[in-house]
Every structure is written in C-alpha cells, then in structure tokens.
Amino acid sequence: MLNFKFFDVNGSGSLSIDEFRKAIERIGIQIPTQQDVQALFDLYDKDGSGAINYAEFGEAIYGRNNLIAAGGALEQAEAPVVSH
Image 1 (cartoon, helix red, strand yellow):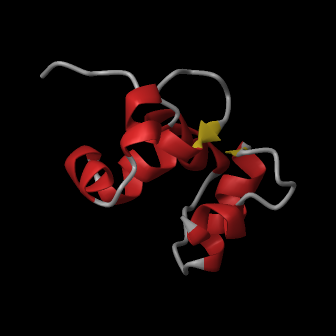
Image 2 (cartoon, one colour):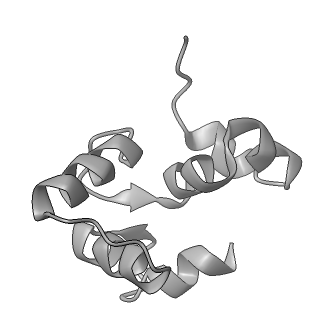
C-alpha cells in the first residue's frame, strides 16, 4: 500500500497519532479538535496499541473483504477477527 508508506513518515511500520493527523490534513479532511482526531484514531487502532499498523490501515481504508481481495491476506491474518 503506497499510501501507508507515504503517511508513515518515520518508516516505523505504523502511524502515530501525529502521522495520522498529518495524513488526514494532507487528504483535505479538517477535523476541528484534537479530541476528535483522537476519537477517530482510537476507532482505527483496533488493538489499542497507540499506533495504526498496516493491517488496521488497510482494513479502515479498504474494508476487510476488499483487503483480502487485493492480496492482503498476510496483513489480514494479523488483524483481529471481530464478530458482529
């Protein structure tokens, strides 16, 4: 996912909240408060690690089924399974 590498400025393999905020701004989305940014970040940080990893990013952007279809089976296997 080229977009993930573009947003992962420090090359750590995950997005910090600061990288996430900057990524959102780069694509033209304005989130009014830091609290709102944190709430959105927490929504995508499925494992609660304090960072959004590649699998979480892919699931958030492309959806679980689309990530598998796009060849992300390895990343998908690392993501937690959520029952609805």
